Image (cartoon, rainbow, N blue to C red; front, side, top):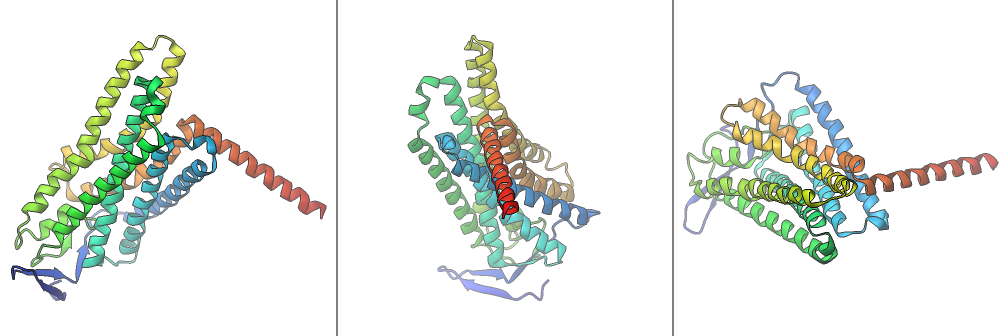
Amino acid sequence: MSSMTSDLSHTANTTTIIRPAYFFLSGFSGIPHMKYYYVFLCLVYIITLMGNSCVMFIICLDRSLHSPKYIAVFNLAFADVCETTALVPQVLDMFLFNRQFISYEKCLISLFFNYLFLHMQSFTLTILSYDRLVAICCPLRYHMLVSYRSMLKLTGAAWLLALLLILFLVGFNTQLSFCGSLVIDSYFCDHYPLFHLASSCSNVLANLVMFYINPCLVFYIPMILIIASYICIIYALFTITLPQDRHRAIKTCTSHLILVAIFYLPVTITAIFVSFIPVNIRTFNFSLTSVLPPMLNPIIYVLKTEEIKESAKKHLRRSAQRAVGQMKSTRCT
């Protein structure tokens, strides 16, 4: 490891920044039977691509789904596809073919894209909670408060905030010197293991501040906003007198609540018990929390959201009828 070539660059104040040519990702070393997990990851990736692509395709194709709410649903499916594509192929390539060395530049690129789309998943779930809050608490003002314009503004602001946070993360990492170990205790170029390597020969205060600020802005504040929105929703449900209207309102929230639980609960539990969980188990758990929500999101939306379910059935019937018609015409000729 010490024989790696290093790129030395000088900053304006003449301090030397030591940038290694490569890092080594320890990944899942020490965890038995990991080859089966890689097969599982491959299946998860295929299901994620197919499921989210279908949701995006249905939303684009069906005019009845061209509503402000489905801008956020489309955005969530897009972020899911991009996040798993940025992570899973790289993990499979590195650990299946023993290519665990990653260049300095590729490491920062991996950090950028993995965090960007992970942030967008959290922000989009928060936007969807706002949609449900307005729909149930202010139904008469829904079309005024949740318009195409407002939803596009919210989505654009989420992308901008995510992009700014990631640029700060990556920018601070480019100012670090790596003069000790180059082994990253993770399955990708994660922020904390990366700047932790530089702590012996760099001032990592800015990185440490971002390490605490970033989860607050991306996970804890959105989670608090979602919980607050559902407290308001529960209060509003008690004011609905007709049981069928109350049942309909609850049904519209179930898919979003399941998505929120799948996304936030594993991350929160791991963060609370992080000091009690062994490194290998923590790495394995974080990898699961990165790949399972994007796979389950489209399944839950198709099964739990009536509009998407009906639209999917309609397009499947049309495809089947078209296939039968082509078979009949082929036989006739």
